Image 1: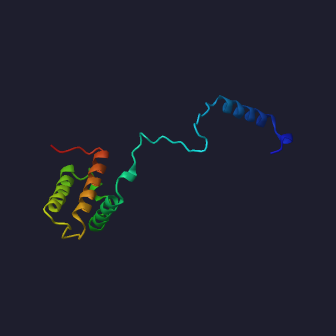
Image 2: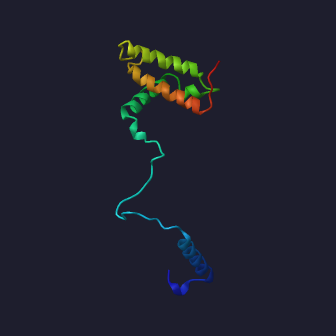
Length: 131
């Protein structure tokens, strides 16, 4: 844009922007060649091993084929106790030395991860324990 063709409104808006830039606080960086970002208060999803995420996804995919996607959330949502019981059965089978579920062929730990994911989703959606 040429300065010769600037309207009064554009001058006013440019002046406004320049004034706002002057009012902005300066950012003091110790070393201007290094990026800075504070993620200290944010969770780090990379701490969850990819194998757990993929295992849970395998079992959830199996569940989608057997029932339907997000079946556990339909209606009022599956009771938490049903999900807990399933998760506990898979965990007990694994603790007893059984690595794979007979029906799905997947690791019992994959099913534990899937059930934990469903449990968290249900709780986050407001589902309460039945008494």
